[in-house]
View (cartoon, protein in one colour):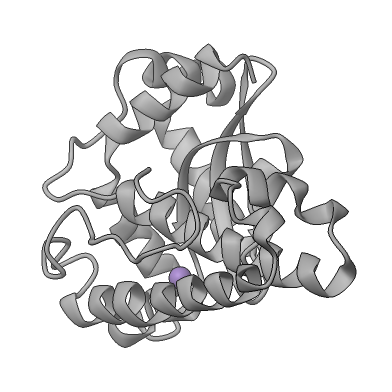
Length: 211
Ligand code: MN3
């Protein structure tokens, strides 16, 4: 991840705003990246401005220590460092056209932990639908296992020591313009644009870091 330190900048998407059509529309991608993510970047920089002791920390480090910060700063860092990290992770995890299914070590691990890819999809969709209000569903790696977890708001699984492989943003701003209130349809569309190369690399990194 580039630009991992203060002052944070909104690095461009790794593809055009329209690249994920027809699964995610151009306008949603533009607003999501240039407005929503930009706001988290601005608010994170604002929160760190008066805290030089935190300015040398990476996004990951900020999220991991957020629980130990004074209450008000804690909320600002958790929401905004999380908002930047989670959005970058989500956007980098997408591509179009995509390979239809996982391969390599991730395919193997999914088979071990979820029997097969179809069953994984069912379980992941169930989790993504279960998020009440705003949040994310994640595939994470922990203690040699894959797990599906959800996080509320902009909380990030790395705060709990989980190593993320892929995620879906299920805040309404991620899909409302195209899918309206139909989160299930958005999730089905998302399965078509998962960047499996990126997910495979994430798993390899997680295994290397022994998490
Ligand atoms: Mn979002």
